Amino acid sequence: MAAELAVACVAVTPEHTNAQVFEILGRHRDLNSLPVLEDGRPIGLINRTLFLSQISKPFHKELFEKKSCIAFMDKEPLIVDAATTIDELALLTVESGEKALSDGFMVTSDGRFTGLGHGLDLMRAIAEAQAERNRHIMQSIDYASVIQRSMLSVSAAALERRLTDACLVWEPRDTVGGDFYQFYDYADGWFAAVADCTGHGVPGAFLTLIALSALKQALDKHGPRDPARLMAEVSLGVKASLGQLDGSDSASNDGLDAAFLWFDATTGQLSYAGARTPLLLHDPGQTGVEIIDADRLGLGYADTPADARWTCRQIELRPGTVLLTCTDGLIDQIGGPKSIAFGKRRLREALVRHRDLPMTDLGAALMQDLSVYQGSQLRRDDLTLFAFRLN
Figure (cartoon, helix red, strand yellow):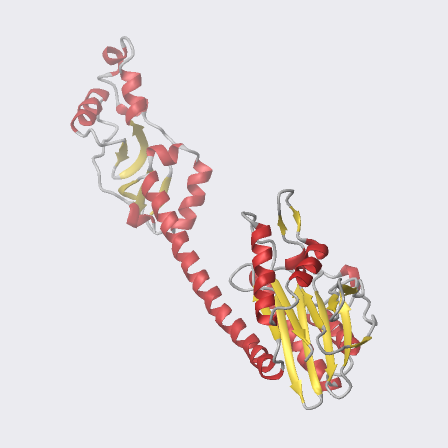
């Protein structure tokens, strides 16, 4: 409140002459502004610097020293009620102009003067209030991160139990993120999903909750064995949740890119459906890496048709085959001497370079390569990477 910033100080009335003001300012050298009151109510403010510069002009002292001090006062100072909040006071100060910061503002209670507020004290109060808000926001975001990581940790634990040679990296750009992964273990195989929702930070994290709910409902309804069908269900569910079923007329246009995988343990066959999220495949003995392209249509967006369908690709995997998929936070990261994206070529080269490492070490090596390439550049996006080697 403004009352907390009000400082009691010397004041004058219209009956005070400029000579008396000159004498008061001489005795109170720390006084930057001098309030002028009439019957206890503020009517103006005398700025020390302006007053002394005016009264010191040739013949001004002789002309004005016996006249009322209102001759040199600001007749329109900022006057606020003691109950005015700091936020309201900040806005009033901006509207009043820089003089409210340099001269100060007059605080009243029931119209009567209670004290003078100073611009520096106001700026300090604003900074402290903002710091307190930021602290509360960060506490909320930090706890949201705990919740988000806890939700994802169930899948991470299932992955660790099922796959003996795999790696999983999840690094939000901010404390919480718009990427997510899921892993479900079944008697005859496993299902995995890697997804990149629109945005990052808090908005992205909210969207992951919607997408995760849609994926869980799709799995409960259709099972894990048709990734393309699951994508269609998730897309429809996200569109419905965000009110995007009416197409481009929707107020929002949010969705996700993803890779859905079903591995049949009895046949060794992988079923893959991709929405702008490709697979990288490295067979043992190969010198290069094969890229299995995804469909160029995201899930859930306003311009994604409600009846959209994605392609399900069947991939025969041999023992020793390494498969990797990641969100574009890795591929699109800017770095290097030319400040360009890391790109798929560098990712393929890194995968070949580290192919003989255990998958946990391979994942760490890839992230180290990315870190070196990124250098001093800021992280652009959330990043999720999933890779495994078929035993």
